[in-house]
Length: 358
Image (cartoon, rainbow, N blue to C red; front, side):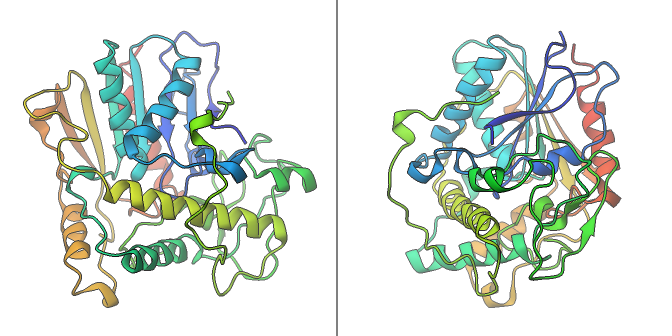
């Protein structure tokens, strides 16, 4: 699996490429569902967490969202050394894209636009009060990711460059991916990716219980360790082939790390007080089936705050912080943004957002 993968378009095109950062699952697979975003083969890249890439067994995950963004920025600069840059991401990925944009501007590079798909301002997210609370939210988020059932492959006629874990690629053809036989799954199709399971298209939000679904970059020495704070049990219903079990564990580990990074962002970490960003920001705001706090967390002040933020039109982004800010309503829900009934609308919005960029 590559950290940065060409999703669509021509990597030799002179058009500014669009880089889309993964949601909290760490995988860029949902971006393959997008319809064509350009008539001129604009390159669109998906960014996958290094946890899902070769060498991840010894991976030391970054200690801050800014550090993770810096790692991805190195890979982006390998592909596109100079601006202007066009960045985006889904949920957690939009937060990371915003950090990348701030770093680029600090280096004197031009950023044209950051497009966030239902991404809240991470500076307002509360910290976990205890290790136990953190672990419980990891479990809730992971369960949301796999609640639709096992991951299931298509008929082998989909894109042959879907990322997969090393063990998967050693036992299966990349295009075939892997078939989970132990549980039923709600499989859905899209024109660009014939058969991808709903579990592979879930942002796995922290508090939502109402949604119906839940070029290689070498790892630097600073990312390597043999330590992990995430237990190896991928769930009570995890009765999968070894390769799939490994993939699910990687997702759980990424959720564990990702929640920690998001909850650790403090005011001032992303935006320096008194400064203004010289780029446009677009928030594609989901309006269907808004996030709801699970019953067991109704008394949790942090969960209540997140519910409030996720329902707001601007999701706590300050419009005056940017050259321009636009919140575009989108009928999809947070976890199901890339489902077939929504992905056409989402693709159209993204297409309009970048059509004026050369």
